[in-house]
Image 1 (cartoon, rainbow, N blue to C red):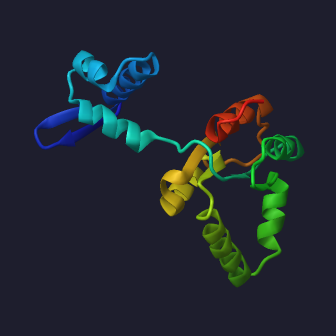
Image 2 (cartoon, one colour):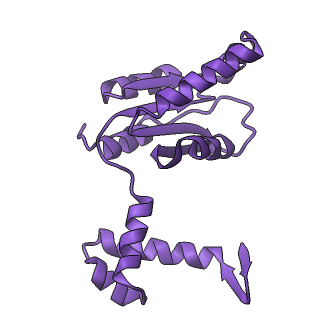
Length: 177
């Protein structure tokens, strides 16, 4: 269990996560914010702010970046079929080849251009390790939706279940397949 010491209080991360999951489950079942607040013992505004903090904007433009992916062609096909505006997918070998064939300044310039371009999208799905997702979130903020495929470092290609990615994209874009 993870605990945080805040002043005289000892806070359980697991207990907080369970409370959040209960709030979201009750809201998803159709209860109003006020009804949920009454059941869990908090203010309605707290429920509203949680929803705002956790909201993934539906619709809008979408980019998908991911590595190291075993089935890049299959994943790219899913993205193309569902109207993803930007897709950048690499296997582990392609990732290393890409990095090794650029000078330091070329790589830095490419990364700066990529970050600038990603800011123009409403949502960015980052498929990768826990560390890569956290880095993308630090750079791009709330528009990043993490699709974690393992803990860093990932040293081999990971097969992505096309249906799982399809479900995520359709949820974000608000389209039916």
